[in-house]
Image (tube, rainbow, N blue to C red):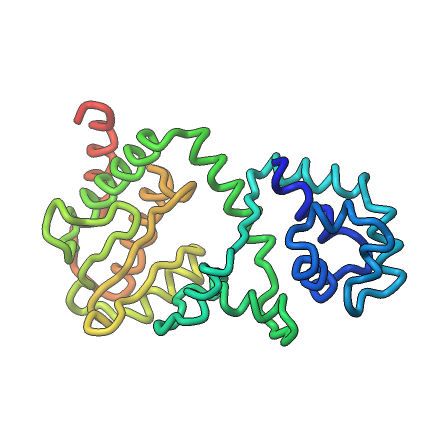
Length: 265
């Protein structure tokens, strides 16, 4: 945290901004020297206004302490790049795949070009933090086991009414169940009815699997035996409305039987 302190402090001083920040870095070499520089030394920095010099001399200890506390609380890391790293970035020949981690664009934003990069996804960051807390609270092994158990309940129910999984047995994804659409079923009408009548949304097939597959998600807090049974009940109702032949109630009975095996497998 000690090495981060001076970088954060200089960036927080009112009126500094990215241009003055880099002027100071280029002149003094590092932010600590700039913060400790005398008024006379600061006056030697080309283009540095008197108001900026006054602000640097005054500092911002209150704001600094708050910012450092947040950084420490959320384990934020300040990243810096030396000349060798910048040289590698400039000579990169392959396009950066991650927009949020495109250092070349961020560098141009902080530089003289002021090229727009992106608005930080703050809400996404908070959501990710909360999601990780929930995962930690439940425990990874318990979470994996829960998703697998509910997947087995769903698979038992679907199999009982003749709906088959597309992946080979043992290679299914518990969180996203890909199954073949039963013969004689109107894909779009089925998914629309599930959504409008039961507020249940499942995905249709993509690419070569368009109109041939359903993608049934059992993810996170939505992965519960209750939700599986609710879905199977709604699915049977929709299949019956379309005239698809199957044994009524078979999916529910098979699912309940499988749920009773939980913890014994």
